[in-house]
Amino acid sequence: MFEFRKIITVKKILLLLGFFGLYFLLVIKPYVMVYGGSWHMEADFAEDIIRQYGKELLPEEFALLQAQRPVYEAGETDIFIARTPEYAAMQIHSLRELLQKTSESRITLEESNRLWFQLYEQVSPEAVYADMERLILFDIWDSYMDFYHAEAIQGNNKYENISAMAERRVRERNRAEVYSPCPGNVAEYNFVLLRYFAVFMMLGTCFFVMPYMVSENRSRMPALQCSFQSGRSYYRRRLAAMVTAVLCIAAVVCVLYVCCAKQDRVFTFWNCALSGFASGFIGWFPWTLGGYTLYVLFLAVLASLGLSLLVFVVTCHLSSHVNAIAWQIPAAIYSLLYGGFLLFKAGEIDKPPLSAPAAGIGIFAAGIVAALLQGRWEKRKDVV
Image (tube, rainbow, N blue to C red; front, side, top):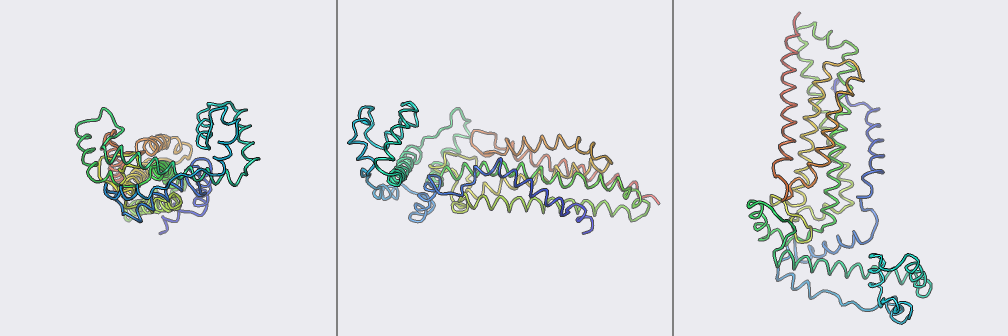
């Protein structure tokens, strides 16, 4: 416990939380959906499907869902646009057409501003916003109907030039998982959250371990301990304290991830198959959204522990913080490459299925071997 307190200090915890606050504001915040809008409207729509039909929307159930599809009725905004010659002169007859031409830049900025200001003045901002919200809902209905026909009914997929093994996996997915209504926005934002939290976890654990043995070496404590026969036990204690500290920091990062994932509705679709018609994703394995999330977090923890073991072993031989920081540059580069790129959609069907676990398990194995070799070297120093 005494060695553990040397690693986990109040100052370091405050620095970690302060850095996370900055990291959240600059990097993660845009991917945490706190406010209402089209993002949550799509998630609400998918949740309603699950509430009515369960985690799989089978063809016969899809027919029932289609029967519930609302009929679009012209709102106050549509009526005003249809009756105004200025809009008709620009081939705009409804709010949908105005939004479409504005988004596609088929009218100039000056024309767009004039038309929108006229709409707000002659109708009302409240009516315009209400009609736009209705349009979003109908767009969500259209997208889900189209995706279902393309994926679940026709069996199409967006992946091209994939291997025969991948094609077999696609056919397997099309038999069951494709019927999952897991929304694409929830899956995609969760991929991004996992990417950034994996990087933060690996960098954070290395940050805690790096100054530990440097400070010990500067105080000459290891040399004093190894003057006694019982000195070899201190290496095991240090190693155990380091592993415990890394696992604790990883747990803290996972808790921070859970707070963000809860806002992004990940737990609402936790048990839904990830490779559904709405997600636009096909994985190598029949993951649920929750299963894939745990898989990525496990690899991130494994890589964090392996990197931290290597950092611990290297700093056993250093007494300068400057040299220690220089030696950690490869660890930082690995964290960015592995967490930021290799783990991002690691199990997607057009990527090598074993590259991410191999890299994570490989760095963990390297850390274990380095720690064992360092332990044997420490025993040789135990000479009275």
